[in-house]
Length: 249
Image (tube, rainbow, N blue to C red; front, side, top):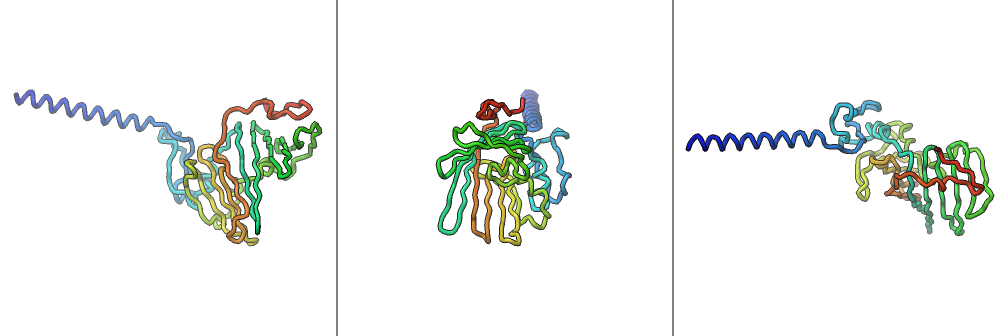
């Protein structure tokens, strides 16, 4: 009887060990997001790539003004996507807003912006040349893009400019969620003209999902685009009114 009791205890112990081993292996094989956030106190270029070492790919750790530039460097925008951006501009006694449909395919970016007069302004640019037309017009104006970037055409700030800031110009940085979108948040110090910029960048897509611009503490600009379609855009999104196809093949 004592022997049977001992055998039951031994069998139970073996089952417990097997369960622990299964849990350990399942945790080590769990997949997560590809973004690796830098550790507090690390300098740019020193963020550890845990994919290479076989660990979890997402390490949710402190993001500070000292480490946020490293975090931003790990982000990559998708090569193909479409989304709608809503922009609101505010001034003393009034405000205005507009929406822009954005479609990106490789180096090409298309914007379709609804204007206050009811017209739609269309642009397609590769960062070197920009094509512009209005509504259903067949005539297209083209010109060198110059300093006007695809982000400028979308009426959004280029968040990569954070990389050029001295650390002392970054007032706050952390990791936070906006409407269930996990973001890196950055706020700049007020510049000599009185402007402050705030950014919320998705760690999953690398896209700017929200931004604010303040003048002397008062909000004068807001943008939001919390969702994006990452499927390949339709070819007809990059055809000029004369039938010229611009999209990368």
